[in-house]
Length: 189
View 1 (cartoon, rainbow, N blue to C red):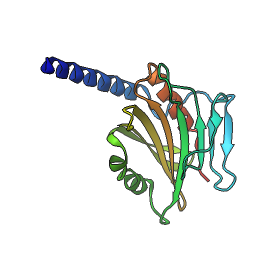
View 2 (cartoon, helix red, strand yellow):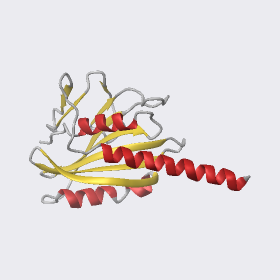
View 3 (cartoon, rainbow, N blue to C red):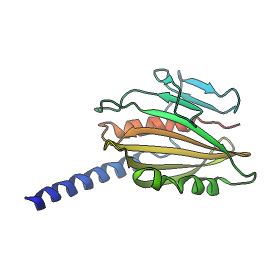
View 4 (spheres, rainbow, N blue to C red):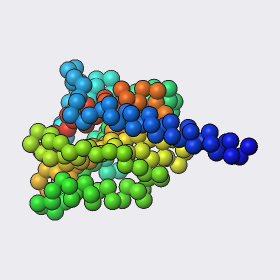
């Protein structure tokens, strides 16, 4: 009986991983949805900008978050809302995006239970080199999150723009594409 239960859990985990990998292959980072009709936020002090759908709402984020927007609940998921947030930190002058991204990611495994990096892509946003990384992790309540982060450097500032949904969403591919589209509107100053 225990063996059969274990086999079902393994099949469920393998199926979930296959779905996630399929989603990753469907969402190339350079393909964005149209942003017509979206609102644009520009930070008054830091000067960065980010666009997001009109139906999303700007909100106060947790400590360290300089911008946050909440979207709808992921499809088929109660008690959670998709979101995008921006953090930044002062970094040594001359640090490149690869070094900053590696330094920034080094602590994620200890912060996030079950952290699993799925993929990363290098690209340019405007004239800035950037990395988009995709990963999953589990909150203490057992909800598995699917996140993507755009990491870039502008002068002495390192930026991380995070988009979040859940792996339980019944429209994960569509939500991931929307989140990537939002991340790709980010423009540092």
